[in-house]
Length: 494
Ligand SMILES: Nc1nc2c(ncn2[C@@H]2O[C@H](COP(=O)(O)OP(=O)(O)O)[C@@H](O)[C@H]2O)c(=O)[nH]1
Ligand SMILES: [Mg+2]
Image 1 (cartoon, rainbow, N blue to C red):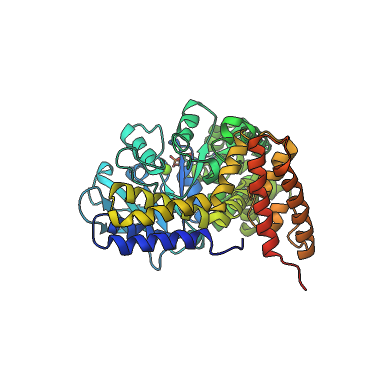
Image 2: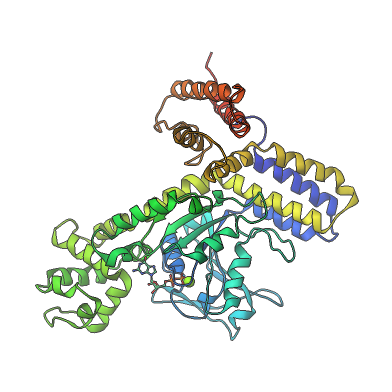
């Protein structure tokens, strides 16, 4: 959007002014951390209950088997995966300075030598890993809510709760991918912690994932279609809409195995597909593991296949091989990845998180700045506090996000068609002008301008109409500003 410096620059300016004012007094180091964070990739936490499939999904997103899954000490620790020039693992203990840990890769995933340190004494592990996904966003694996040990659960919750009740520290993450398997009380309660109390907590920074989608409906061939219908229903549920933007079905296991599909695995799948007893073998896990001597795969090879692909994955993979739809490991990997739903999640993350990364980061930084100024009041910073207030109140980018939230929680009385148009115009599906207007990517600048002008006129009439309820008039004024922004970016050529 045009019209002066973007929100990231404005907030960055405030933070640097604060750094100059605070110098080495208390609050100074925290301010420098807030400043450094503005230059970092967006921080995205993967949250949800234990065994929801968080670590598996993280591996799928990175495209490598890094995070350990299932039990094990490391799965009980908050682990940050960040882009790095080199491969390095650093332990940040609760007490004492950080230190590097030795590690190796064991069967793909990282085996970190914990050096006798107990999980409870670890604040976080930071894994630096050169990987393209991590250059766009840092991913944070959490032990999960509802952990066997409440301590572990609390650690996740503390990381994700926007403002720590105890010491008023700002949220450490900018956005959250929240995995759910079913809607039950705890999911909703947990998502609710993003909302309570502060106007700043909103569903805009949370994307819901219907995880382990391949297991829906007993892993039948249409599992993912069924999961997609459930996800659509969740996404339409007002309670869920008020907590996250959208719900995407993903079979993380399939995606992560596809990303790292080995030739030997492909050959095993070929053997399985060629076995005359295939249909019977794939009825249950037990039969696959022990049935049919005609299948020339050892017990542990069968177990490994099941572990990596799951029942749904094996049914799909063997069908693809049998039908001749694929004839190489590369083909198969591509088909499985497509089926997993991961590409859709990636698109949602790219359109919604990455496109708004600056705004989400600026929002976190502003919260951080406000929290520091509140905890370490400085008489000399009175003017700065005023500027902070002005930036917050004047930020059209924040206002757009808040309005999407208001629309989603049903606070704006518009027809459903108008609501959808308004959400889209506000950038709920992506913030570039053409997406906001629902135009194809190759729409001409004149086309953009013409449609933006139509919307501008329509919302202006709404804003000024005496019969418009107050909420509608307010929303319409904001939408008018959004249209003005688009028109400013697409000026008429003389
Ligand atoms: N069938 C299936 N199993 C999965 C999927 N994602 C994870 N799992 C399995 O669920 C278990 C827990 O996964 P994990 O990623 O460790 O869950 P976390 O506790 O949320 O990190 C592991 O045995 C995974 O193999 C999935 O998409 N489909
Ligand atoms: Mg895990």
